[in-house]
Image (tube, rainbow, N blue to C red; front, side, top):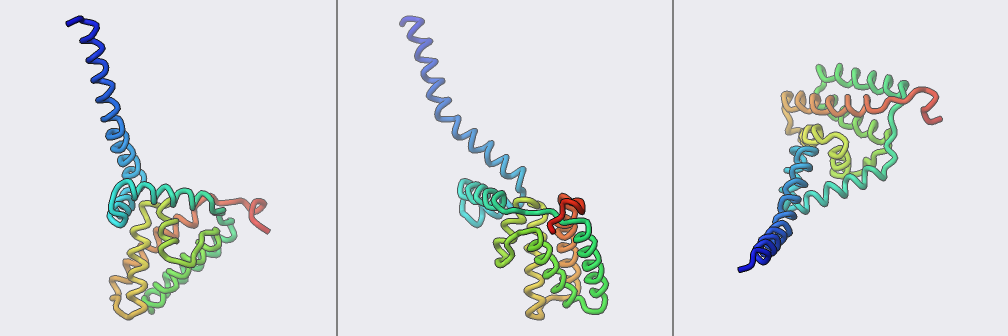
Length: 187
């Protein structure tokens, strides 16, 4: 056999193998990228959608949705007001943990609405939060589940304390994001 034919055959085999293996490696890289960016939320999406590709498509759709929103930062005055409101809610926890947890849930929604997140549906709020705060969305879901149990009088004080801790982590992030100066604040 001619050496040229052997070289051509080897090159063709390598090209065919490359064409077969490239999508596999590309898919793995994409999965690693989503896992690195979204962590537990990626795993949750894989489980709820039934596969990695569907989860990646869903997360990309969430990204498009959130980027189309006109999320605005809070002014320093707004931050001060909501910080004071949060402190009042925390102080109420000692005497009425159930009511304080309900108010914390409401305060989170109020801040999100002020920043221009859609707030009518919890699952949509959680999906939106998952894009900008992927490490906190599982805490938000856990806190909300406790708040719902609280409404049904099925949450103990320790559950409510945990909900407040979860809410606090998201609240802090929502308040500190991109502070605007007074001259930039909406009139």
